[in-house]
Length: 614
Image (cartoon, rainbow, N blue to C red; front, side, top):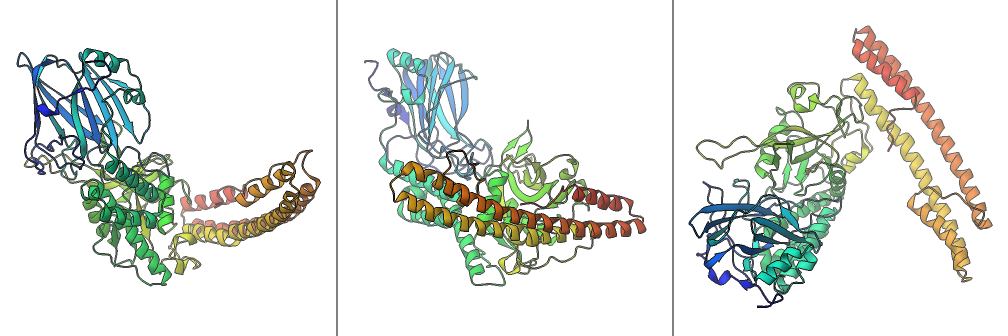
């Protein structure tokens, strides 16, 4: 057999047992999926055994399926010695029912994951491919001690031994036996793209699955970008049209996307209809309405960094959730619901103590500085029990965000697979990933930040909290936004629109002469103006007409800046007078710490620090 010939496919030697989809709750193992080229997503099968006609020391495992599959090879050599080798392919674990993202606008690649793993002379070499990305081969550190193998058992398994995981889908998994010439070629191959050039290595063409996979990735990408309506429309269409969508984990993800999209559409319809209460949506597991407060909640099955989570919340029409202490009505209503959902994965790393959970809208060193506060600026309970002893209180110098995360206690003695997650407060950094938990305030809500209110209440003045210093901050931020930032931004936008109109008219006139080099500076200026970017300083080559027009812009913009400074100075003077009165009242009540806090805030404002800028 030549070095470029096809590999000897050993699947004919594999004795497949009848189809079974049951989960072994005692060991946590899933039954194996092993059959090639049947054109269908496969149901789990029992373990498969290969009896080799003669001992082998080299073989290639070829795998294609959902990212994050685990497998085990149990083997017996010619002397009846037994061993095992377990490994994991791709990112994540189990069926990973999340759209985990490494970038802010894309789902994680690798839903269609391919792996090629060579076992040879005690070494393990692996090539992987996800979403057509070319990668280098890896020499895995853990050696494979098997040689002269006579019998091989192949199985897939649930890496977390938890009942929350669906079986990880494997579309094709095969064992190939190379000739000496083919083995040498494999050992010299460095990149996945080069590996796939070897005849017989690449998987057979599978146009049905390829088309489905591309549509699935596209649907997830719409969802990751916050286009929930489009994503839900495509998910519903795929569930209706594709037989491949009938099996988990594809069905699980598509159904979640559909449920999230339908909930957001229902919420938007409520706003458009000027409704006074949010819809019930009792059959939607991603959504929960709190009848006591009138607030609605939605969690998205996508792992996202904090900034991405905030953008997704805004795209949905809400904000990251602000949930009260455990004994509050909010917590009692929501904690049980969220714990039951257990979005996959429950990712625990005992070395770094990092966990996945739900993003909350609480920050350290936020609007109120040197303390925890809600992004909505609503009254909080951070100084009260039991939050005083919560883990977030231990980070007085830590600039981070609050996470409602899972703690996974040890398994119960009578049932090793029964590990019920417990929710508690934790700390994450900006880049840490978690699931967005979105809150939709009731129409009666009066948050100090207008854009976080229900549309019916965005212009309403927030009510008092009972704490004079906190009431000052809330009122100061509210007034600063409405009386300084928004008027200045509106005036600047109007000025830019007028300037852009003048530039466009002049550029059009010059363009008609056909002198493209002459018109280019005008179009550059026009683009920067429309994008709100800083205008580039002119040079000696700048057209005289553009210089004159810029001078008009500079004059008008200077007027805006001067007016803005006048408003700021007046607001700061008024604020310092209010803080002085508050400090005097605290002093009279012998509340020295609060009086000092008010005095410290006065000094900040007089230096132009701590202003609620956008």
